[in-house]
Image (tube, rainbow, N blue to C red; front, top):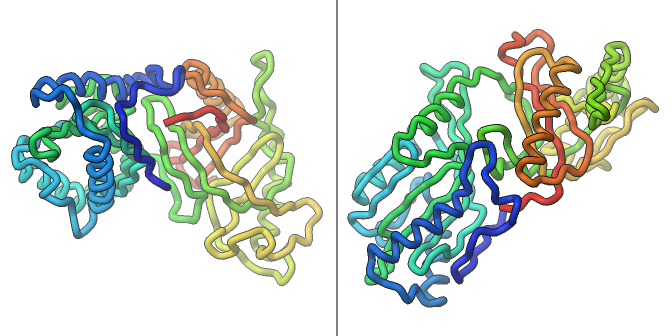
Amino acid sequence: MATMMRCGVHAVRGGAARRRRGGAVDARAGAEASSATTTSSFGAVDGMSAETCEGLKRALAEDLTHLFDAKGIDAALYASDVSFTDPLTKYDSFAGYKFNIDMLREVFKPTYTMHDIYQTGPWEISTRWTMVMGLPAFPFMWKPTLTFTGLSIMGIDPETTKVKTHVDTWDSIENQKHLSPEGVAEVLKQIFDFSQTPALETPGYTVMKKFADYEVRKYDSYLVAETGPGVDVREMKDGAPTKMDPQAAGQSFNSLAGYIFGKANEGGAKMEMTTPVFTNSGRMQFVLSKDKYESVDKLPASTSAAVELKEESGGMFIAKKFSGIATDEAANDVEKQLRKFAARDGLQTSGPAALAQYNDPFTNPLLRRNEIIIPVSNFEM
């Protein structure tokens, strides 16, 4: 994903898309407050020149690509007494700052994605990012994944043009203070999420924002074999629950299984298992390996009139996870919640919901990963 870089002080953007979401205060508002503090602390009011701003953004954007790799960050860009604060940690020197980064790299193996970098104050540059971390297999045998999205607000020393302060905020919490109970609870909630995602190929996506209630994801395109009807999770009307037809769902599943197991495709090719199984507007979909087949025209042709091969274009979706057995009632309840969150936060849904089921029927219902996803048309960072 290309990183945007802009100079000139940027105010809160996006109107309704910037409101408080799922208990998370817009971190951009925090950046504006920090800007006033930064300017006062350093005694400079004129602000950095456009040339200085562009140079710093280029340098920091490049430097942060090495945040968790062997090269690491460049000490020359940071003051020796740089202070760092996030909802869990706090350091007051570059040595402590680097220690925290090295610890995260060695223990959690993070993946860091920067989405944007821009000026938010006279001597302040901010970045918007996503970070995904794993935990050691022992004692965390259920292999939880921790995902955070947020804002890094970096105060620049006008005399040295080095980073003097660095404050991280998370989208999933409101209280951003160091060791806030909310921050601790958010980490524990993610650690003790016991839902299991099979180690199979799945459509790629990036979590753009993770809130307390739901996620906003950008999906890559992916290949599917599709048939129907399956579990219908269309947008509900008049609050009436959508009916599930187990017999039709079973027929759809068997048709798709025949295709991927070689009984209903040209050449009898047996394909690798993938996840999840999608049901959307009365249609059921099995994901097909894009790593292997790349495009629809490279897939083995279907010999069943009931199975259609297609490419889903991906795009922006909101998603909410739930465990247990994905009954019609449970799926409809989660869809109701997700649409309520979207309306609250000014997000415009642009299509029917889909149910994603990641596990086989033999998985303990308490460990199952199910999701409702809905496309949105007006999301802004």
